[in-house]
Length: 112
Length: 114
Image (cartoon, rainbow over all chains, first blue to last red; front, top):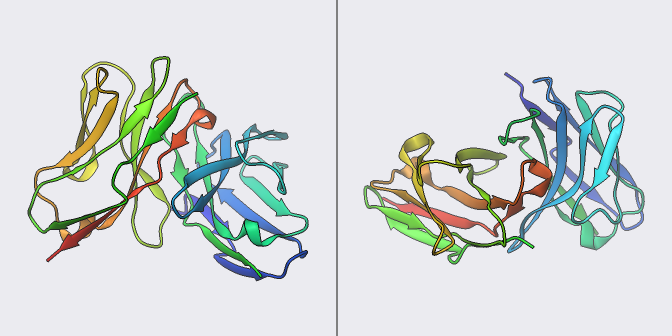
């Protein structure tokens, strides 16, 4: 039972570098989400997707881009990383019509 | 706009003692309410949810929560905690159907003392 898988689990970047976080789910869920978790701030929605080929902005989208070329994958990109993007990133997926989210185990990203 | 407040950032409790984790929300419309749990080095898992109906909601692992509309609260309770309950607990609120509308609280870290 893989569920929601995030890669990588840890990454250290220098300011200005780019990277892509991959989220894969094997539950055939329509909806996928990217959150960031910061101390004292809970989880904040970055971008989300309600289906293959569609994406939308969440609460804190600036500095991030996403793509959903396949239903099972949702990619989060940082084109030019900044120290303010140091955070733990969580991917989640959900079934249409259901309020239950399934989360991955997170990616710890540090930008120096 | 909706918001959610978790009043306690950390709660230490002795094993087998009862616990209550507090959550208050603010909204001008009807809401859906959730508690998620995050065990160390894992993603969040849904503990329980209130969508409508009975105000007392039972979840997994012996937890329950009560929706109180007049006090705009959704406190989480367990009558007897175990070491395995050590985790961070997040309250979340949504003003409509759709997970993109979820607003999470800042979390309460529950530490069980043997």
